[in-house]
Image (tube, rainbow, N blue to C red; front, side):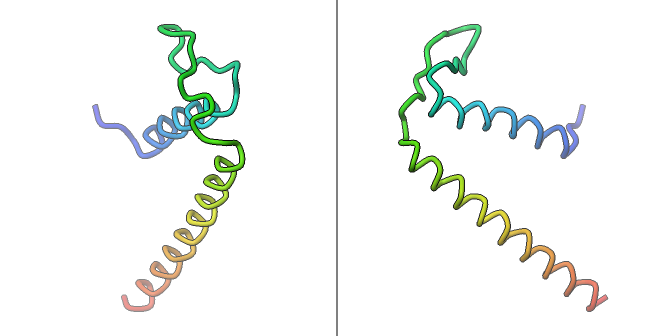
Length: 78
């Protein structure tokens, strides 16, 4: 069975969201039901986590604009 791009993105998004939330929320248990501990808590400060998220957002927007520009140029060439 082959996974679709949507299901792959949903899988990555869900698990990355749990991992990111686990670094800042004490009530998270990312490996539940196998473990109730949260080893990721405090792995990075809240300020650093926010900075990484903002930087990732800017990189994502920049990549999106670059892909749009590239696609527009490809349409002109063909």
